[in-house]
Amino acid sequence: MEGAIELVKTVRLLLIGAGNVGRHFLELITLKRDILHDRLGLRLVLAGVADRSGVAVCSAGLDPCRVVELKLNGQGVAAYPRWGQVDVSALEMVETAQAGLLLEASPVNLRDGQPGLACIDAALARGMDVVTANKAPLVLAFPRLLALAEANGAQIRFDATVAGGLPAVNLGQRDLAMADVYRLEGILNLTSNYILTSMAERGLSYDQALAHAQAAGHAEADPRLDVEGWDAANKLVILAHSVLHYPATLAEVAVQGITGLTAEVLRQAVAEGKRVKLVAAAEREGGRYRLAVGPAWLDASHPLAQLGAEQMGIVYHTDVCGVISAAIVEETPMPTAAAMLRDVLDLYGTKS
Image 1 (tube, rainbow, N blue to C red):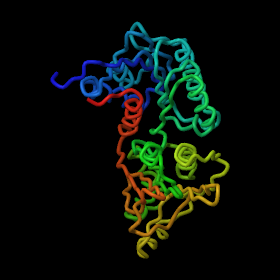
Image 2: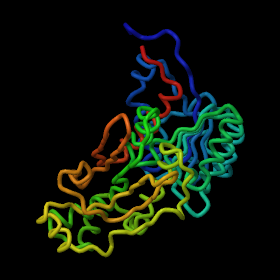
Image 3: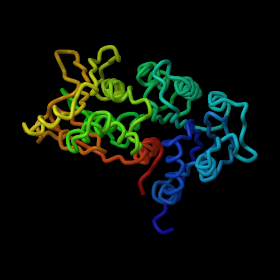
């Protein structure tokens, strides 16, 4: 192909978690294979994949389309012909498979971070790079994981852990690297924003709005982590570590959810030129930051007040770069999967 670069870097990767995000990632690298190869000089080889059923491992490469087909047919990756194994765990795969990159997209477990935390530990200890969409290991062990990566000459990327496909982490870390961020505000949880927007704009009760969110695939069967504010709080901790260089803990975050709000309160806010949103905020106070998640009555002109039901966003207040805001419409898990691929390109991609 004309304009193709001659040198192509081959990266063998392992994927843990073949649910919505992991499956969309596999679809994405198939869809973008030519662009990755010809324009960016990158060949991604799926050397192994793990889910609850077991693993499938082949150093020469598995077919991502075949893995997707298995998942869509309700089967696990252990059913992959020839290379599937039911008696091997994700951790054992990471410890033994020949690969240079771990993609971690297993379910979030905020109690102890497992199995994602142990797999990331093992990968970094082997000198493997890590790209993760799983926020739990970072919330529980951010400083230790970064130190482990540095000690073993590895790198870790995690833009997909905060607000899905929105480049909230990368914007703060890269584009605002020399700025002093004295305040950040974000709508980091889609479920809560969908519910509050539906209540305010359609006059639905909380229970009705939650049911609509669940039917649309924007809320879990058990939505407490989202509607009680803890999902946003966990993401705020990651932003504090990665962008603000502040070693926050979850215990420092003052958290209030949205379950006590009524449609009447939200409609009254609209009548007064306000919008009620669940906002995660970090405000510098002296040498520390005050961290909070809770309902905020925002002026209608505020960037976050203008976000629709299927949007998330972030606002950075800086000393020299002004006030920068970014938002995303995320109707499916594809943007989150794309954020993982964006991190892979940050590690290995080359522009033509």
